[in-house]
Amino acid sequence: MAINDSYDEEKVIQAIADALEIFYNSLISKIDELDIKKIMKRKNPYLYRAKAMESASEIVESVLNAFITSSEETIFGNCFFEPIAIAASGGNKALAEGIDIMIENSDKNTIYAIAVKSGPSVFNADSKKRQEQNFMAASKLAQQAKSRYEAYIGYSYGKKKESGRGKPKMYRELAGKRFWAELTGDDDFYLKIIDFMGTMPEQYVAKYKESYNKACNRLVREFSNSFCLQDGSIDWEKLVEFNSGD
Image (tube, rainbow, N blue to C red; front, side, top):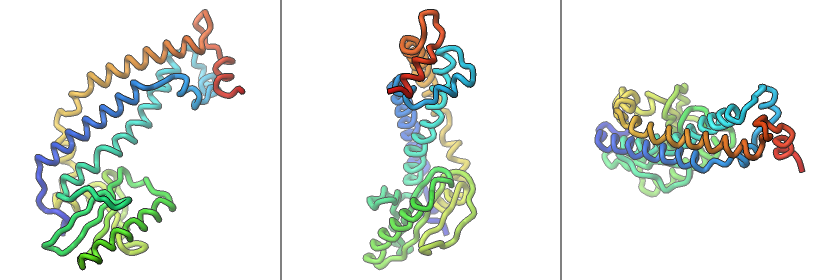
């Protein structure tokens, strides 16, 4: 039987709208704050030379796209799925460490503890052990309330073979369709998340592109001023010295 078999569609749609706004505002803010010298301190100048990059715009575009690719996945994972899961489950934001949602179902005399993750490859051995410890700590609330206790790790997309009850035999791992169906009682909920977005993402596209273009122009200017010769060619020695010298 699903954790919640009756979700409020309007609350879910509002949670998606709020999450998208946070995602785009956070990403745009990070793009606006980019500093070429801070970036080039962390990059490999030998790689750019080995790829025969000859212009500031080539390097900046490579840097900017790499930054966006890494940042957007992190930002999206942090802001998008958890509030949707809270809205869909009818639960509350958990106060316990490492637990995202707590649901007290008096009809079933059960307390549910849910850790919401993005994809199914987020854990290493140490972090998985910490998650198990967090579930154990949260189980004490159920013991005090004399309630059944069920714990879940929910992966918001992807597929994962259900682990059943694993060490210490107190949680299940569900991914993608199975996770959202367990949470809502709706086998198609994982598809409906896309439908619920509607045209909401499109309203942010112009603002995002404006920020991207401004950052690209600004970073090219900053790179040229710092690492290009008078004739416009890249001063590779200066760039490498800045990156790796004393």
